[in-house]
Length: 269
Image (cartoon, rainbow, N blue to C red):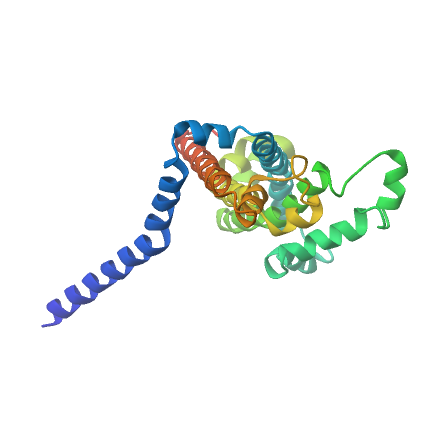
């Protein structure tokens, strides 16, 4: 009787999981693909190569890649500092790292706009120098770094604590400098955490909407990223462009995940 009960529970859990996957993931995404390609490959190609679509794709690539170039080294060094070093205010700084998780991304973007915008404290000083942050690519990158940096820190930090300092201390005892220890001992041991952090940051940067919508000004053909392009196409009832943009975004996400998995299987950092 107990075995039958366990089998029934197992069967129900499997059914619930399959229903969830079908209702929220499989059916909506297959329907999206169907709608995107239903008008034909030529229409899909034309929709994906318009000036506005290509601009959104270019901006998405720049924002994702440049923000990762900033968050990766900054996140790793911040994690090492918070875990390995003891200093005044460390607990406060450690808590501050989670601010983007607690506060809506739009608030962070608004804070950046208030600081670096034309009427902001620093924006008023930068504007005469021809340096534009808000309504331009630099502001979009800053907003993306704001929302993605914690993912690197929170993936690498716990792994550092789990690994301990024995290997690093041994390397220093053998004469390795701090940077040599970081390169040849610390970083290889953090590979899994780094890849997981990059994966989460990449996904968040690729799909970030609220923060970039505010700080970019949503200028069509200039500062739009792909999520904003899809939103604008949808509310303007340009459904072919919206479906096409969504498929392109899915393809970018899958390609990124595929490359990260290849890196994960590679033995070298």
